[in-house]
Image (tube, rainbow over all chains, first blue to last red; front, side):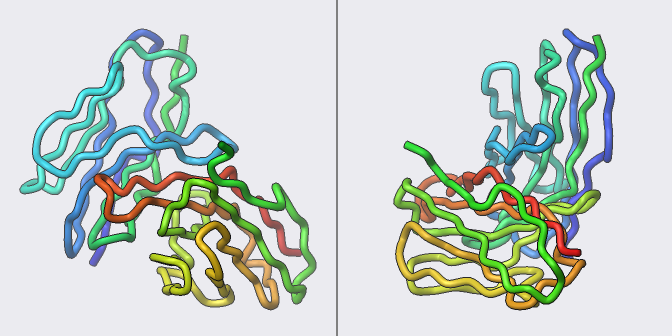
Length: 109
Length: 114
């Protein structure tokens, strides 16, 4: 069956680094997405991985291992505005995404 | 450029009433989606449309219907609302077949069915 697992909640300190993990079991794989969602707002796109390896985009990086069904989102130099939920999603086929429940990240001063 | 707009922003609805949630995009994306988001659950796909004139069922389609008469609009209708349809509804669009085919989301509609 389809399953995407992420930790429910994480806490980190301002200025630090945090890694949010995502494991997936899907019938197909055609890319993995990370989205950020602030409370009461819409999800916004952060990153996309389709090949194994690390994709870096400023303070945010995303890693994918297709053989392990595993991805992580790495956030560096944490800022208070990074407090949000981070959603992992896998595209199985051509269009539709399967979504994890999201990880709520709490940043403390 | 507005991107994707949804209306209304929020709504309280009596059970049994009919309700249409509106979604319009100005990015000329061919694919559009309707999701619901409930606490503790991931986004769940209700219906989708790969191109104008075609629609498909997602993971949780029961009690909902959609139409796609043109590229820009993708309304979601609840024929007879029930309390379990209380949720936040997001519309999204993507330019399918182009690169990552990233989905872009509207601001959402918070619906309460009493």
